[in-house]
Amino acid sequence: MFFVADKHRLRRLIAITRDDRRPAQQRAGGPFYRIEARAGRLRLTGRAVEAEFLATVYAEGVLFLRVTLFRRALQFMPGTPTIAVQVSAEGLHVGDVTLPLEANDMLLYTDPARAPLRHPEETAAADEDVRRGDGQGLLFGDEPASE
Image: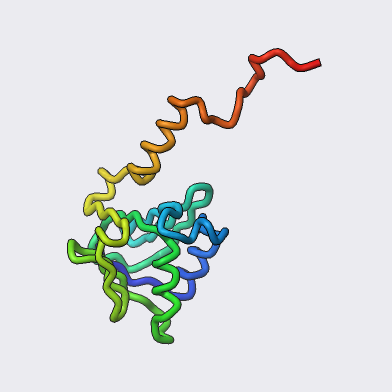
């Protein structure tokens, strides 16, 4: 996966779509974030909000990562108007910074058509919550109302 994007727009759209607003979510177990580079567009997906914009895509792919670390790495990039992001088996390369994939809970899919919409770990956790009955409650209130 390799793309070049407008740095200001990328940072702005990450700020809108990210799910790590509370300090507890900015730690190692924070939510995963999906970045898809395909057909000249970059799609940024949080749990509730998605944004898409034009970018120069040299190699397509989908990357799942914890967005807090990525946001912080972008803050330290020099004052250039564009930013090149390359993801390979060695890791995520942004400027002079390389973040290893495994050490930073990242998953790379080189074929966007085969990539899931949610990180497999979050999908498994949601499925487990359903099996345990840890949902939000009943939609139509099958339980009798208390008097």
